[in-house]
Amino acid sequence: MTHSPSEEFDKSNIDSEKIKNAYLKRIASEKSKALSVSVMGQTGVGKSSLINALFGTQLKTDPVRPCTREVETVEFFAGERKLAFHDLPGIGESPHADIGYIKEYRRLIVESDVVLWVLHADSRSVVSDQAALVKVLGNSKEANSKLISKLTFVLNKVDLIQASPWTLEPSGKYAYFNCSSDTDKLLALKAAYFRSQLTDKYASRTVSSTYNGGEGVLEEPEFTFSQKVVEYHGMLSDKKLLELVEKYPKHSDLLDRLADNYRVIPVSARYKFNLSQLLSVIANKASESAIYRLDDFVDLREINRISLREAVGFRGPRYKFGFWGFLSILIHWLKFGRSWKEVSGGKETYAER
Amino acid sequence: MPRDDDKYRRRYERTSESKKEKDFYEWLKAFLKETGIRAAAEGTWKSLKWIAEKVWEVIEDNL
Image 1: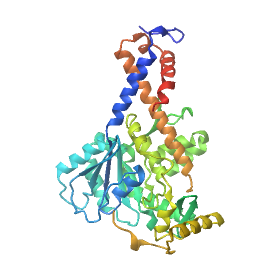
Image 2: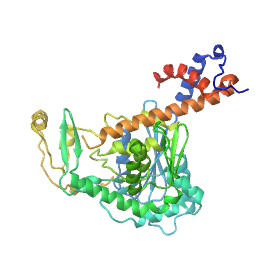
Image 3: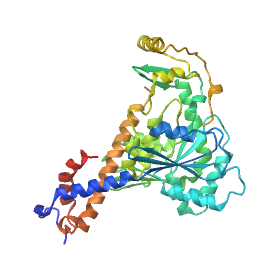
Image 4: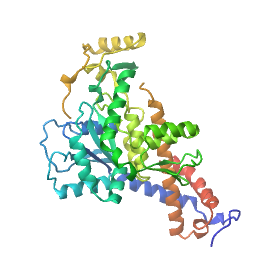
């Protein structure tokens, strides 16, 4: 039996209380599962620190972990919340990476709620990651497409990059790290370089999707629209993005979301810099059921800010502050009696994470 | 505050809301079929929307 659009159905049949309870039960069941986070990357790129900065976990950051290809899983519990962190070490260096490891990597990429591929910002070497990517993606076009669509590439430790010193902007008890516009340009160039070396060659096999915000349909062959989801078949390059935004200005946010899925996102876990952009991409790629678990671990108020006390303990950035910023730091200094130095650079204090 | 920080926070929130809504509609369709409320399950988008709206208001506060 089907209804015509105008036909009414028997509303008295609908027990909204029963439906509500059944749905809340389902949500509780989803939330009771662990948020599964797989992170791929060479030793020393800062995988655990990145997860700690994103999800407020306190995973141990061990600088002397032996080089291995085995997946290490660490579970973190906070009340009823659970996070399973799968550390997938780099396999690029090994010419004979065991097929068993690769199968395990693929399984985790497919099954995890969040999959990050972390790169070191202060490096130009991509050979290991390129080799690892080829091994993980394999030759099957179908599997290849499924796997690459799950990956989010992250350029971590961007605080080590500077065209001019980073700035610390105090705001009450908190502070935000920021970079100058010339450092920002440098980061964009770095990210574009890594992207060109790692993912651009898979462009024809990727599908980028985001929610349909009701902006209306784009009459372009690469797009498909459903009631809730918009897909772009291919990889939206910056050049193509500019063309489309010019042609469809009302869709600029939608287009940017689709493009972001395949950008290399520059972040600093240490400075909590640009983590909100990374989170927006993570949410975009998460499944509908995973979003409940993800929400439980994300605190948008905290995501890019750092306590002033912690910030002034860092050595590295040069601080920029106005009158109120100066006052808040002075109060902090009087309160805690700590001294700090202005040091531009700061690589010497960077523990491997 | 870093450039575009607010934009990305809002984007995260909207994405999360949209995914929850999609999840709910899909679950609701399956639930109505499964529990025998066939008239609504096989019915129009309008009938589904009516039920969803009636229930969602209560659910939203509990998410």
